[in-house]
Amino acid sequence: MTCKQTFLFFICATLIPLSVSAHSNTTSIEVPVGERIVDIGYNRTFEAGVPILLDLGIKNADQTTIPFTDTWVRVSHHDQTMFSAPIFNGALGGARVTYVFPQAGTYTATVRFYNDGKEIVTADVPIDVIAGETKGPLWPIVVVGVSIISLATGVGIGLLARRARKRA
Image 1 (cartoon, rainbow, N blue to C red):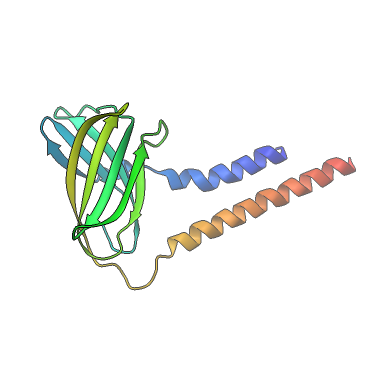
Image 2 (image 1 turned 45 degrees about the vertical axis):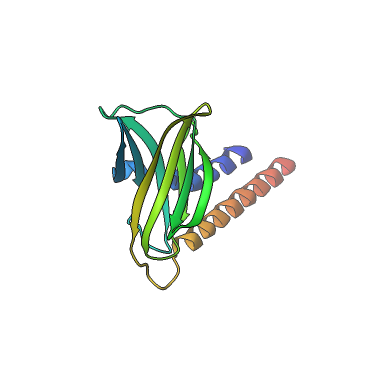
């Protein structure tokens, strides 16, 4: 295995597990708007202080997916905007956003879908967030640690391979 192949293997082995779709867990909030349904998939319980992956989509009443190019999302709490951003609907992964709700309570996610600049549908989606644990989450430390170890291993193998080629 070449240095480049080894490096790519370690990068893929680290990043691919992190890109699992929130819709793979089949948990979602569906809000009917006329003949369309705004669908927000999520990968865990809405808990304050814990990152949650949101998959954004729309479908017809017969459950067929409606294509869209991008969406705009705003998360608000007590009339205060907590987050606002456009989200591109990528060919790999779709329209996704990770958000950390700072405290327990009822939030409103306003989601507006577009197709090539033309608005398709807008919905206000209520989200109830429960209180989280007082200690910080451990997963960011694990992800960063695994990433650093993988990168260091890849660089180390690359340097060893380079030395071996020079000696041969």
